[in-house]
Length: 241
Image (cartoon, rainbow, N blue to C red; front, side, top):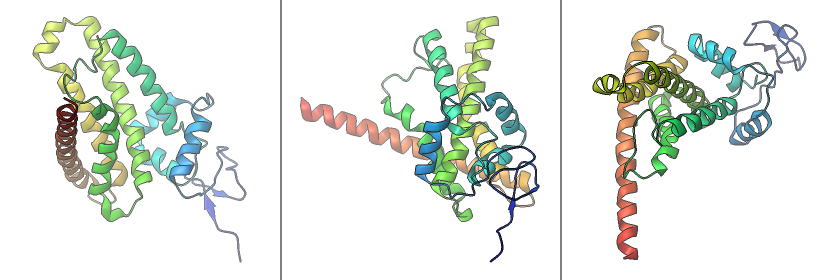
């Protein structure tokens, strides 16, 4: 039985062996599973060899190239999702400390803090439902969302910090800039996610429809989740009184 042909999705050259002779990335072709994601997170979290900045530029220009590379098991060329999560945690920590425990100028009030943690999960669920016909696993959707949500939230926070450093806060608040930046971080996550999953020839039209569907599903899931968490929280308070 002949050797299975392997092609580097970065260089598009035929590969014989475990590494691409042109770019040097390892080609594993291993199926994406929760275990493989966890192993990648642990092994690459503090790996400084791969440039997050270069990967960010490629994600902005060709998001499918980065994400499909990870799906295919070629995980040694671009910075991993775990690296982007680390960047987001660092940026969020600095941002929250500078902005009186708010995120993009928005306080969460009485909203259960658990909603902040589960937001990425709700984004993943919206993506999974929207593109269910493509039969991609929940882990493949998770990788796409973790890359994109981390990237766009980081960009939104940086824009927020720049604007509020040079422009009067009252002026920015009057234009609802914090709300607009929050909206933008979700919107661009869904637009870029649609670029990754849309395979139709009319990719622009298809992406617009898929973006709208993801947003509607996401808002619906968020409302249901918050309502459920508030109900559970109030029920527990009533029980212990």
